[in-house]
Length: 638
Image (tube, rainbow, N blue to C red; front, top):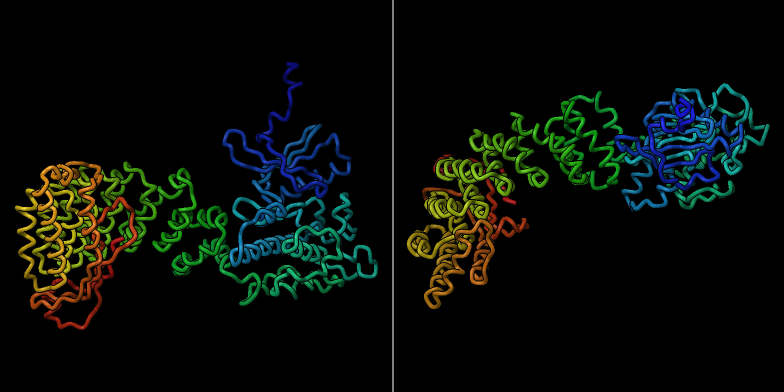
C-alpha cells in the first residue's frame, strides 16, 4: 500500500518527455520539449514549468495559460491536448510544434515559394487575433515571434497565452519576464494616450512587431521597428499603421484581412486561396470543387512540400473519401502522393486507388489510366492482380474508343506486376481481339506497339508462340501505321526469335511488304530485312555465334549478349521512323503518324514508341468509312 502512495505520480502522464527545444530561453515561463504519446508514438510538444524553481507568480501565470488554452479552439491557435500537475511539475501538452524563430532560421524556401508561405503564416496569426479580439472579446497582450509556433503542416499557431485578458479589463498587463517588455506598445508608458486604447490596439502593435521579426529576425530594441528595408512593399503602409504611435489609428485585424484579401493584396495569392478553399470545402458545390481541383495541379510546384504533404494532401484524400470531388481530384492527389514514403503511400493512397478502380464513371477510369504511371510503382503485385486488374480488363471491351486505347497503354505499366495467367492469358487474349478486330486503326496499331513493349515480361514459351504471329498479322493490316508498327516491333524484339524462324517465317513475311504502297512502310521493311539478313550472315560465317544470338529466346530475364547487342542498335534506330498521311486508295490515314524516341524506363526495352494522332481532318465521308478508323484522341505511349 505504501508503494502506491510513494510512487511517482508523473507515471500517470500519458506522454514521454523528450529532448529540450531551444529558443524560448528567457522568453517564456515554459521550457519546450519534443515528446511522444505513450503507446502510439505520436509526436507531440510538452511545455513544462518547474514548480520547485519557479515563483508563485510564475506558477499562477502558467496555470492561467493552461486554463485559457483549454477553452480556445481555433485553426490558428495552438491546439491543446492534455495537461498534468503535481507538486513538482506542470505539463501542458499540445500538437507537435517548434518556435517560429527556430523554424524561420532553418527555412530553405526561396523566391515565390517563400513569399507565398510567409503571407500564409502572417494571415493565420492575423486571423487568430481577429478571433480573439472580435469574437472572444479578448486581448492576447503577448504577440511576438516567441509566442508563435509552427506545426508539421507549416501552419503558424498563436500560443503564448499567459497574458490573455478581457477587453473589458482596464488594467494594463504586466509581464513577469523582463525581456518581453520591449514588445509593449508605447501607450503603456504614456497616460495621455491610454484613453485612445481600443480592444485591438495592443495586439495590432504586437502584430507589427511580429511582421518586423519575420523579415528581420528577433527584435532586440524597439527603435529597430523604424527600419523598413526588409518589409515587403505590399506590407509597408499596413506595417506603418500597426506600429503607429496613436493606438486608435491601428486597424482591426478583421479589416486587415478584408483589405489584404482583395485583388493585389498581400494575402491574395494562390497558396492562401487554396488553403482557404480546402478549409471551406464542405460548403462548396460540386461545380466549384471540380473547377478548383482541375486548376490545382499546376500551382502545387510553388507550394512548400510540408504544406502539400501534411495540409493539402489529407484534405484531398478526405474530399475523395467523403465528398463529391469527382475524378478531378485524382491528378493533384497522385502528384502529392510522391511526397509520401512507402509506408505512408500504402496507408493513405493505395486504398483510394483500389476504391477508384471499382468506379463505373468513365471520367474517373480515364483519369486513373492516365495517371497510372505515377502510382503503379507503389502497388503490390497481389493488389494489382487480385483487386485492380479485373477492373482494368473491362476497359478492353469498353464501347468508348478512348477507354479501350488507354487500357491498352496501361498494360505497359502493369506488365511487370501481372501474374502468369493475367499477362500471358488474359492480356494476350484481349490483345489478339483488339489487334485483329477493333474498328479503330489507331487502337490496332498501338496494341502492336504495346505487345512489343511488354515482350520481355512474357513467358518465353508464350513469347515464341505469340510474337511472330501477332506482328505478321499487324503487317497485313489495311491501316498503314499498323503495318509499320508490326515491322518495327519485329525489329525491336529480334533477340527473341530462333534463327530458323527468322529465315522461314519472318523474312518471307517482310519481303511481301517490300512493295507496300506506303514508302514509310517500305523503308522500315528494308531496314529490318537488312538487319535480319546480317544476323543470318554472321552466323553463316561463324556458326559459334548462333548460341549467343539466341541466348534470350528462352530466358525470362533478357540480358543481351555482345552479339545480340549489336543488332539492338538498328532496332533502336527504327524508333526514329516517321509516319505520314496515307495515300492508299483503300485506307486513309487520318493524320500523319510520328514515331519518336521517348524517355521511358529501361525495363520497357528497345521497342518503338508510336504516337498515333487523329484529328477531325477534312476528308470525305466515303474515305472515313474506308479507313474504318473514326477520329479519336491523341495517343502517346509513354
